[in-house]
Image 1 (cartoon, helix red, strand yellow):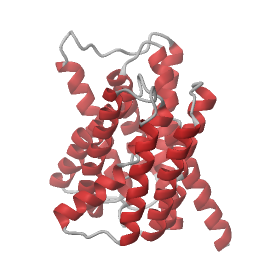
Image 2 (image 1 turned 60 degrees about the vertical axis):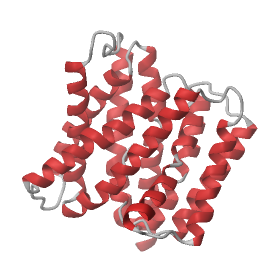
Image 3 (image 1 turned 180 degrees about the vertical axis):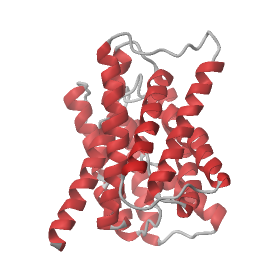
Image 4 (image 1 turned 90 degrees about the vertical axis):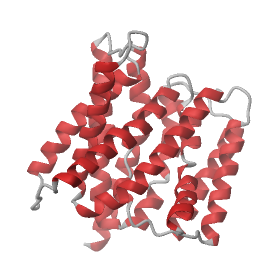
Amino acid sequence: MLKNQRLLGFALVFLSSLGFSMAPTFSKRSYESGANTVGVLIVRFTVASVLMLLIRQFSSGQRVWPQPRLMFELFLLGAIGYSGAAFFYFTAIENMSSGVSIVIWYIYPVFVVLIGWAVFKTKPKRQTIFSLVSAMIGVAITVNQPGNATTKGVILILLSSLTYTFYTLSGSRAFKKTDLYTGVTFVMAGAAAAFWLYWLLAPSSTPVLFPQHMAGWLWIGALATFSTVLSTSSLFAGLKILGPNTTSVVNTVEPVLNIAAGILFLNEVFSLQQGVGAVFVVGALVYLGVHETRSQPSAVLQ
């Protein structure tokens, strides 16, 4: 029975990684239908927040609403941190390979460790430093090949990674005070509200564009359901079975799946040099996951 439960846990976390890895494919397809980043993300987070609320209400277990102050804190995490990370990332992949983007984006553990060291005085272990150096080498190899990425795209991906770092560090404390589904519901709602506010206040020079064809709306629907709600729910369910350390290791399959999806569905070309860079990054993530205790993976959203 225990073995079957473990297999179920692996399957759930793999399903989560698969869903998250398909997000660039779904978003790029919706761009082809006339939408832009903000238009896609408005629909994504609005649909996701409603679905997460329904899941929270009808899933098993007693759940109480958090105190108003915590509600506001979680809402702000979504409105500032999560929405910012999503905006920078999905803007970058409008004109950039999703495979290259995800390899660069996974530099965020470096930011987490460095900021944790500087702010919380959490000195990293020797194994952690080794894995982070490997990750940085991998990113350098990936972006150093001419034509792989634009300067603007790399900057946007790094901004996304840095914003996600602050979201993770802040969210790790807020998520301790409530259950995961309640926390995620407020984060999604905050992200949706941020993009709705942008739409209302955006100047005419930067319009918000939605899909011009039904296919585009269906792609965003897939992004909201499969790559957001289902992936998040599967991650949490798998986390309960496997625990944080094993979950973090299994999650390292995500950049590999992302690269494969780009090649299969977007006709992206991933060179040998990029592959070498990806090996450095993914290897670093596996090594980091094995040696580091990640006590708060609940804040991990993409």
